[in-house]
Amino acid sequence: VQLQASGGGLVQAGGSLRLSCVASRAALGIDRMGWYRQAPGNERELVADIARSGWTNYGNGLKGRFTISRDNAKDTVYLQMSSLDPEDTAVYYCSVKFYGRSELYWGQGTQVTVSS
Image 1 (tube, rainbow, N blue to C red):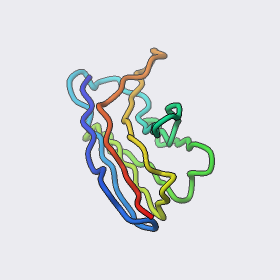
Image 2: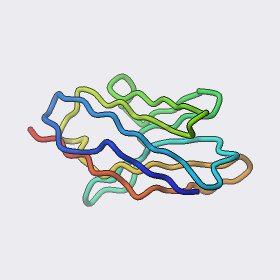
Image 3: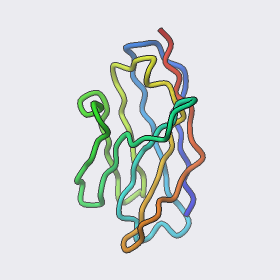
């Protein structure tokens, strides 16, 4: 599977961004699609993920400011981020998990920088 993320960039504190990630090549059988992020010196952490059914799971404290959604017909997952804070600055990675498998597959990451 190939994952192509887009939508990152530089935004001022309080602003919004929308990330997109398209899965292609052997995308059949994807169960969960999600977003993780990693800031310099920190471990990669869950932002949010979503099952094909629409069930969602958010990282600590992110629900409300971040909203994950998915278009199953397009094998695409979105992350709408609002009220961004400089602490949200990180590389955001798209991930997928297939039915019956435990491992995650990763995209190349997209940089999000929030200026104060």
